[in-house]
Image (cartoon, rainbow, N blue to C red; front, side):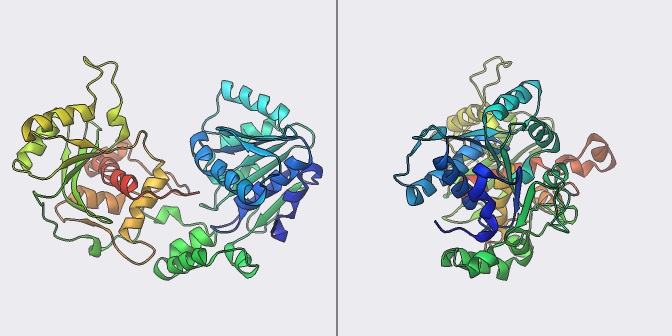
Length: 435
C-alpha cells in the first residue's frame, strides 16, 4: 500500500497518540484517499466502528462511499470487506457507516450522543462546509476513550468554523496538544509519484487559463470572497447577438418565485448553451407566463423542452388540485397550443448550489480556455445577475438581498432568481461534482 509519510498517524488509529487529526490541502493532496486507507487498515486489525460525516448524507453516500468501494476493490480485495447499500462491513465485525451534519436540534444531538458512545473513528469530510453550531455539538459528544476525530477540509476562507472550533492556527500550522495538524498540496505528491499524468495535465491547464482558481483549488489558498462575484471570468466574449431559431429545440428554464417569476429561453448544442431572451414578470402566475411563451413564439416548429427548478414539480397540497404542479400547468398549456408533446428535463431534486455554480462557471470559461455559454445583450437581468450576485464576506454563501436592501435599491429585487433560472440547465446538461 502506497502511503505518503505526512499521513502516518492514520496508520496508527488503533493506538493513536492523537485524539484529533486535522488535514487540509487542495485538490490532489490525497486527504480522502489516505484517510480511507488508514481507516480500512485499522478496521482489519481490530473490530472497530467508523462514521463518515458530511454536511448532507446523500452527497456523502454518492461520493465517499463510492471512493471507499473503489479502494477496497483495487487495494483491499479479499481482505474481508463487504459493501452494502448504506454501509461497509468487515468479517471481524468492523463497520463503516455514513451520517449527515446538516443541522443541530434536540433530536439530532441525541442521535450524535448515541453514535459517539459506540463509534471509534469519526471522519468529517468537507469540514469547511459544516457550521460552527453543528461542529461544536459533535465535538462535545466525543467522549469514548481512544476515539479519534479526523477532519478533512479546504481553506475556502480565512475564517473557517472548523479551525475556530478545533483551535487550529493555519498561519503558524499549530494546534492544541493531542491534535495532529497538516497541510498537503499536490506538488508534494507529484514529486513522490502519487499522481496521474491526466491529473497533472488538468492542473496545468487550470494554472495557465485560470491562475486564481488554480491557487484556490489546487494550492489551498483561501480566496477573498468579499471581493469575488460568484460568476468568474465572464467577459464581453460571453455576450453575442443570438437569434431565436424556430426550427431548433426551444428550451425554457424556470424559477417559480412569484415576485418576480423568472424564465429564460435558450438553444442548446452538443456542448454549448445560447440564451437569447428572458421573461421576468412581477406578481404573476405560471399560466400567465406560459401564455407569454405562446405570444413570443407563436410559430415555433422545433421541440419544446422545459428545464429549471425541481421544486416546480412538487405537489402543492394547499392548491385546489394538488396534482397540477407548475410544470404540469406549463406542459398542458403549451401542448394544447402547439399540438405536440412538451418534454420536461429536470432533476429529481435541486443540485447543491456549489455544484450548480461550478457547472456554470466551467461553461463561462473552461479549463481549456474555451467559452461555452453565451447571452444576447437583451437578457439584461441575466447579465445583471452575472455581474452582481456575490458571496457574503468571508463565507461561501451567496449574499441575498434583504427587504431593506431592495428598498434602498429596487433593482436588487431582481437578484438571485434569474441566476437560478439560467444556472439550472448548466448543471443538468453539463454537471460537475465537487468532492
